Length: 393
Image 1 (tube, helix red, strand yellow):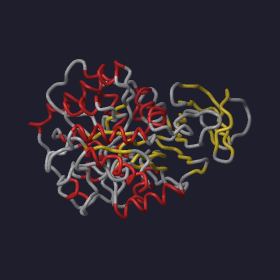
Image 2 (tube, helix red, strand yellow):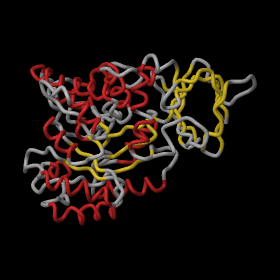
Image 3 (tube, rainbow, N blue to C red):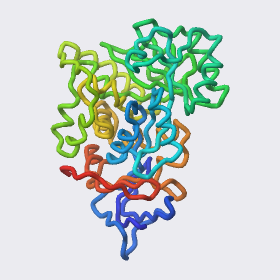
Image 4 (cartoon, rainbow, N blue to C red):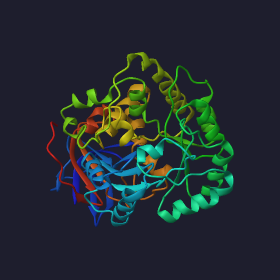
């Protein structure tokens, strides 16, 4: 297959007027466009690497979630906490990697302290960590269960958080086995402690009135990546993210499709000011060169905030990243090459020969206007073109 005359964002830079050839699910050639027939006309369009959502929760219906992600241009999803039957189904889908579903990697069951509130959300008991002495065994169990990386929940108030010694032991156990450790924190002190304990990345930024002026450099000095999840933090700060998404006809049919029947928090303008810390922290991180990864926390957390739409939320997150301070190209890096690099998925996230042909074709130029990622024309996974639902594009 040949896509001709297309603007290419290759995961790091823009290449105008290119021909891209694909064979047997792999990109074989990226060269200046030449005259001649092509399978796909790329004129006036932009070709992107398949997008990542670096923070989702795929339970309770992982197959439906992965289909919706793929149809939205998200060809790889990083699941940040799942267990029980949904996890078993997820692992089957990971192994099969069908062309019509987003590829996935998962943390499996996250590390939590006994008595935590996440058991209530899950609806069943979770394996917990009560001391540093059991960290090695707990990590071994997660890897045997099928986890690709380890997630440590270091911010749960009800039932108490993990203690810092246990966090350090979990990080050491993960690293000793060659896997990444990421941390859930939504307060700056906890984020700093997790970073100092050696985690590879943060699964969230945090909310509050302010942030210490050295946070970005602190994160850079420790070599971490950060998944801001602005859409969910904005929701926690009293905004209603779904209203903007439902107003966009390109995304409206994907918003709140299949939303779990859980109560929605009402809007609360009195909390809007708490979003300031997330924005300030993101600006510091970008200035310090910390890798920023685009992720949404889509699943039960965002459903409680009134927005539930796998894939649609990723496009909204990209817009929020640009509103905060990133350039459109930096936001696209955050959804392509940066998560591929951070999670060691070296076969995707770029458009160049030898890479998986996970590709997204859009009308317009999202390297100038990030909202153009919503103008979906075609999505390919390993060279197979997906059937896309009609949208208002």
